[in-house]
Length: 575
Image (cartoon, rainbow, N blue to C red; front, side, top):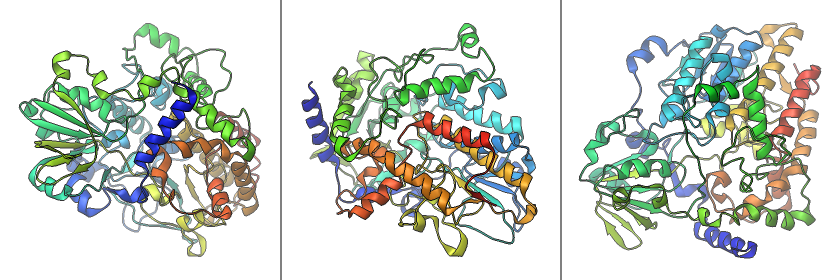
């Protein structure tokens, strides 16, 4: 397939998906109409939460409150400990019944991570843990989160929803927003879905009903599905792992697909002692290995490929530099050339771009139970897709997660307003001409509030490595301010307006690197093309560019942050 043909194919698929509703084509679990029926926590141990999971007391003191108990929240907590603070002064708050973040909620059959475990699972060297496989299964990743919490004696306030976060001059506590990007499931607004839920078994992949299907995450023998007709909506990263497992047990499996998705090789294998000896070969090996992976992400020259997988293979143009690179600044007159260059990504592998999910089911007898169906669905007592009636016993919604396109501020994922000085909400600032951040981690007018914002931050397919950079920056700033402050009880840390404007100007200069995203099919990564049908003034376009991620890539972002920490002069920070 030639480059023009591939570009044409992309545009055809994009036009199929473009919808004026944007994110409003979905409803997420924070809406009681859906959440009350599909969002109940099936994993929580209420006895444990009652005795171990409620360290916060009404009106009681708290120094550091971290919103989120997944990788991001845990790394913030550990870096605060490294900086000299006490575990008893830190509480991680989560709606879940335990640590793990997205790995707490997602326990579906076949679940594993698509980034190498040796670089994705945090703090392996510090906890002395060796992953069982090159790509860890979900239960093992959740186990590492629990191991970290136990190792550092971290406190979790579980089954707790944060409603509002407001600055108080008199108390001056620290708030760290570490709510993840894959924790709030959403479903499409299908006509008749409520009726279908009343007549058939329906559940989301992030709330897998093992009691109904039979089996468990560790032993996924779904014996209760024998003889049943099952449908699953989606062919993304979730569904492509579930489908082969479901197909082993059901009488017939219908896979409803709207747009074919990218598929790459994983080549799973067990970790042997010899493998581990070569991987964990020196102090700080994990951080060196993360940087090696990120060199492929940013298309930097790499003397050695430590990872050796589909992400870093010689023909992996699909990922190299797509989410930022230090190689060049994209300007208005080079946008077209830049976008065109991104279409090299799958010329050698174009067939895999449209790979049918049936290809992942190897066994012929199992594959016979599988049928791929186009999606244009209505629900009711039965499912209709493109005029064909499907009488299903079960419908699985592998339809992904909420993306904060409507509220790009740190309050978007936690659905709890962050209110700074003078009653200004974070969402107001993020959507105004006054927007600015410093290293994507703090903003003027919001003292003692830190976060991992997409805006102004470095991004990587290995989210763990990106989280850790922000955590180190935050811990360093807070620790240095404590050493210099006269009154610890009223310490208020925030960037100066001048510093955040200077940094955000640099973000804007690099924002055109992401211009290729505008040619992608709408999805989670592009915020479902929110606002695509609205006319944009030059001022609105400029404001959007200022809210972009760091366009020179994750390693350049890390270099800047570490240099700032090393200088130790707190330039641009008021306290």
